[in-house]
Amino acid sequence: STPLHRFAHDEIVIMQAAGLLPSNDDLALVDGRLINRATNEPVRFTLDEVLLMVELGALDPDARVELIDGELLDMSPQNAPHMYAKQMLIKLFIRELGDDVDVHVEGTLSLARGANPSPDIWLHAADKRVDEVRGPDVLLLIEVADSSLLRDLNLKASLYARHGVADYWVVDAYGRRIFVHRQPGPDGYGEVTQVDRDGEVVPLAFPDLTVRVADLPTSD
Image (cartoon, rainbow, N blue to C red; front, side, top):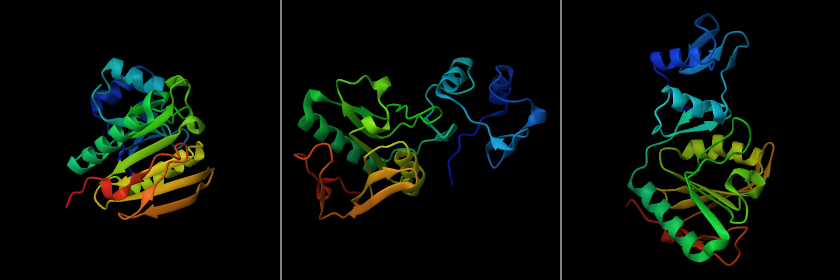
């Protein structure tokens, strides 16, 4: 199930006072999802509104959340295999790609209004400002998955494909395999390949760089 961020009662009151949520008469809570009774649709937020929540005290500034399709989702906690795999990849990219490429770690990626995920790793050309980067500008995007594997293969893949991310990898921190997603479109990725531990992957944007699945840290 989608790990929706759940607001406490006092946080909801703060958001209503600020006009971020409808009044109680027009607000319903269904399985943790805030629903606007007038439209029967989930309440959706923009990044500016999320920043206002933090400013008003309705959202902990240290909360590990991301904005997907206008809804706040809790990010999965990171265990040791997740952190080791992410650290290995970050070091590899920084060492091999140098100053021409910016490597972001859980930085907010502004794909569109209400679509502001925080991928584990994403890369773009260093000559482009981070706030100008959109899906097609992302050279490589990686989610390192443990408990979030199904979410990364489905919800996140759909999001990134719709917004034109050309090379999306899901690294399975437990299974030592990489799911490579390419050929993005409005209905998802046209090409999805599972690369197992004896295989290797070459990023589309960096043909001289090879990532060997066997080099990923293992939880064995």
